[in-house]
Image 1 (cartoon, rainbow, N blue to C red):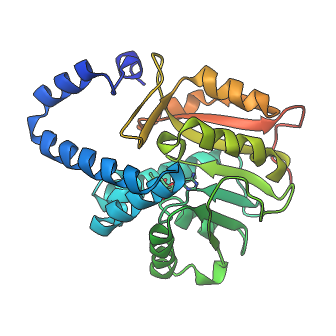
Image 2: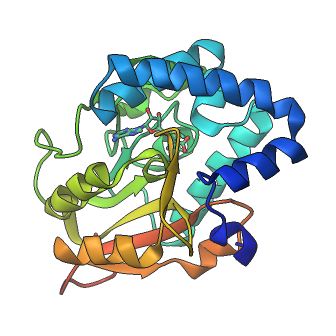
Length: 266
Ligand SMILES: C[S@@+](CC[C@H](N)C(=O)[O-])C[C@H]1O[C@@H](n2cnc3c(N)ncnc32)[C@H](O)[C@@H]1O
């Protein structure tokens, strides 16, 4: 990722003024988003219910745009394929069991479900609207016989999931929309779910400058902050350099349970 991009603070008035001058046509859209988000924040005090309302509002216009910030189906499919190819390239085999946090409408999930053995894909999301769209994807892709689990979640404690069950846990474009306490909750509990040698991969919007957020929707973190937070919960962090070569604006980190073997089992 370009150094200039990771140094930006998108919440600063100077950045916003420069952006508005460069993209005047985007100003009305941003102003509408500002108003909507202020209204939703008034009605929903905790982040999960606030973000669930954001997803419902976005999805009412376009589910693809809601999960991918991009209206074209080709882009939706391309980003899903990129996630899938990356995980398979890193050893994801049909016999593995996988949990996808923030599965969206199965942009990558549809390929993962097809690849994995029956019942080995488990997707969770905070948005009922998006989970219904995920079911539509299962139907459209003819994946019913693979029996994917699709579950609504209210937090990231995973209390309803078993110990040591998942070889791969994956969260793409979820922490880019999550405040620190949501990420910390996930780190505090995700290690319990990992099978021996399993890993948890997530993407995040990386900054090398000051950490910041825009509209309580987009959050920018330093790599060191997330690695230190993971260490507090017994997880070892690895920054995934090979992901940086791919045409994607976010960075990627892999967490493993400290002291455990680092290769996928089974
Ligand atoms: C940008 S979309 C990405 C969806 C999917 N991972 C993909 O790549 O297509 C983010 C998704 O994460 C979900 N989400 C956001 N915060 C979450 C949380 N704390 N727990 C579970 N899902 C969450 C949203 O509802 C949304 O479906």
